Length: 332
Ligand code: TYM
Image (cartoon, rainbow, N blue to C red; front, side, top):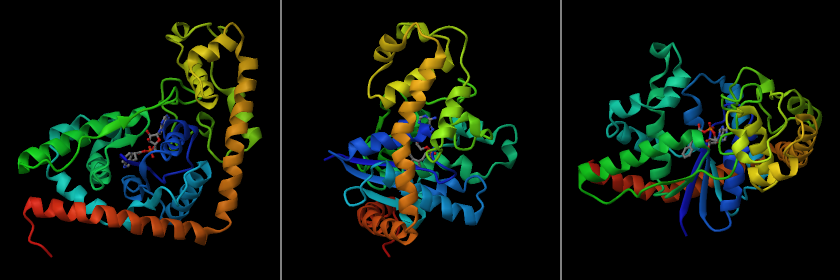
């Protein structure tokens, strides 16, 4: 069985983008893969996180992941800081990755913005930690949204350079699994921007804990253009907002753009939006309810994460230990 690794930051409430681009695929992959899923709190602190909020968000995210359908008895679910091997391997990778490679990372440029000099060093070396997360388990398949593609290419460059420099065939090649019609869910206010937990406007996203009324209201207000929906996917060219809503619908209905447009093409947005909102409420309502139920027993969530961390550590410890031996560290 191939090993899967993926992660998500506890930097806010998970969004529809996280769900359709990643978590929903994580759930499906459990059937025939050995899966390890991680709440990446070390990544979260590359930008400021209020400590009390970070603890709460880590627990809430774990609950939400379980509510989406991750079964912690089958898959491993844990928080990154509980397994120090991630940070240890990331340090070694800091010494393998080249500055030129990191300078090309578009996500760093986006997140650091104009005030680059004031960004944390952690934000800069963020992709090296991501490579360590995956390679510490010799995972070969990584289900992510489209925005992580460049980071996974960098992880492969790191693995290859490590193997080459030390003359070993130790780290495997990683395959990015970027799946489905909603691998890049866009903001509801601006079809050129990614839907994100950290967007200052709450109207730009659907949060996994939004109520039915809030979902309906956000979809009703979602930006669109005045034209009716096209009858085939080619007609979505240059219509980012329309494409986004059609992609979301297709993902939720387990179909593709073509099928959605066969049904809704030629209609205006108002009836389409109503159906989309109903579909969202039907999919997300039970997840929000289950998350709330799980959070009424926070000790149970902590226990799940704790057990997950022990299982994760038992897999990555020998791999990181072997890495240290390859690098030439004296055994402890
Ligand atoms: P994060 O927390 O930003 O997002 C978690 C997952 O959700 C996907 N995603 C989206 N997919 C579609 N449309 C969107 N608008 C959208 N927004 C987010 C992301 O692509 C991701 O799959 N660096 C990663 C976390 C990470 C990781 C890893 C992932 C850390 N270590 C190792 C894979 C393997 C991140 O910040 O994800």
